[in-house]
Image (cartoon, rainbow, N blue to C red; front, side, top):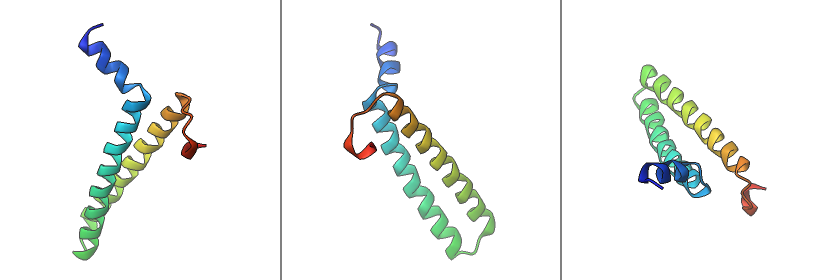
Length: 79
């Protein structure tokens, strides 16, 4: 099995999905900081940008969650 094939398989595995969710969570922290800074500066354009970014992060997290459920995870926290 080639390295590229292994990398693609990891991306579709439970571990890969958890890693993607962790990366998405770090993105959410950045978006929250961006929203806080935009509110403090009363910068409407930056606030709109931060909200759109946050919406993308929420959507990405929902897709990853759905993928995790599809993989049949037995994690107690996911139900």
